[in-house]
Figure (cartoon, rainbow, N blue to C red):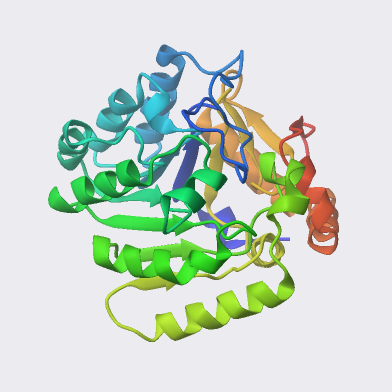
Length: 316
């Protein structure tokens, strides 16, 4: 089956998880990141810079740098400056605990499309329950640093049984902080969240009230509320119909076919980025991927296996 991606010589977006390490151990983390959780085979600085050079050479227009916590990665800014210096637009996803004015100043010299900060509570007590050891004041200070530097700010909110009652207050905080976009949706049953699922999953009644609130808030001007696709299953349905022109690079250089699936289509220690793109497109043309996607749509519990990475055969 042919898709629009088959006509593209390169991905339109590379989402790059630079490390599994993090300065927080959040209960809802989909990548299973935590302090000291750096993978033993993560890319070295030189390997990462080599991939950055390939991204530039392939004319990829947009790169998302994330983790784990990307600011824990010692060569984050070097990678950002290599990409941004070549005109690649950047997005940085961070928890905000380490994002200070000096880092923001360096990023402000680059073509930054946005900096995304996660705010998972309107009060310190709730925020810290979901993100143990985190400071809401530091996250707010990071947001202020971003907007003072004139950079676009996005806020992300992961609703859980812990914090869903503060969703509207967090959304209003995002407006007050000057965010241009508020990202949210059903909690993803992946990684650490899957292990804590009984204590994190909101009820369907809570989700209905949450979605109704988002609809009310979306009618107000001044900030985009991005809430669709609302669930992982919704996202997979969209991908099955039209796969996104996105490569997801894992910290060890493997390239995933989709965040909600364990399938890996390339190893950038062995394959070039162009070969990874070819493998990605080939995977989405195959009947095996179609079957895997539809199984994951039908059974949410399968999402918990998304981090049990498995390399697909070369000829998918």
